[in-house]
Image (cartoon, helix red, strand yellow):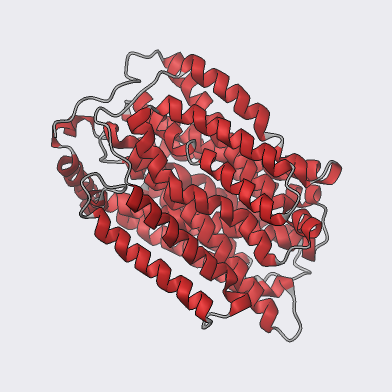
Length: 488
């Protein structure tokens, strides 16, 4: 099948308009990022409102990330096929509607359902926006800097989310945390329709329905087994059955994707060592973030007795670093490559979590301040190289798929991180003779420390000469006619 140039944004756009498009796309990331951090701050209040166990709070987070992870790959390829701006605007609309429904949820079950609707819209935002950015910024150095700005928005949302969420929950109630998404979505829709040109991949891809369903079954059954295992037991028929379904659906997915003509996931991508490494690093990094936010929210409010607002203030050191450092990471990335940012991220993320493995109810706030600050440094450096490495070697025509796989990996990491550390804490509380929530978090912090070490080791592998060569080989294999247009 002969490929053709990507239709849409190109070098003809002025610099001012290119950065205007970056700002519009970043609004979607700000909205989604705010939603994640605000919901985490509100978890104890939601739990008290609905008299929910720890597993119920896990589902409040993971129902969203589960649906998001399940649909991201399809949303990316759909955007490449039907139009990136059209998909982006549709996602903003659905996300706003889902947010309104969450604000009026009368029960935890319905809140979880409405969070899933939110996630349907969210799946059409970040990977599609990244695809728009990739096709707008065609100069590699300019694109790396743009990705650094994009990553900084995550830090901004992390800085605003805990404080804004704490103020809203304390003064109005947890329902108000979902209201803030609506005006942001409306403004983004208007600006997107006005300034973002429509773009598509040159060849329309069919929707891989079977592959999509298998992904959803795999993620749902695996997450269910992890979250519900402390209550049912790992050897129970229900949990064992869920694990068997997860393994079976994963095996079926891998078998199907190798045989279908237009797969949901092109397995050839995984011949690129940087792409595989970026996928694994994304899982580890966002497992760290998801687990960090979940454990600290519960610890600061339920163990230390802080209000949502003051709990949000305590995490500001982490959020500020995550806001300030991504542009620095992006500049280093554009000039020196991804090795330095990934090494810094791996060392600091593992060091931060290691500082919290002996967390107690009496741990000093100065110790927490340093640990949170160091974690923010690590997360501030890790996101830009993940994104840039994920699309390295991929033709721009398939940027939506490549970016969506990276975003899927992030959400899988967040889902697994919350599920694992929450389940470890619940299991420790269940089996402890004298239950202590602070002590119950210790196994989770060890797991998150391991995630930081994994980022360090894999980051070194991903930036080796052998890895870079494999990316070029993969680009030529996927689309040899467009080797000059690969993302490098």
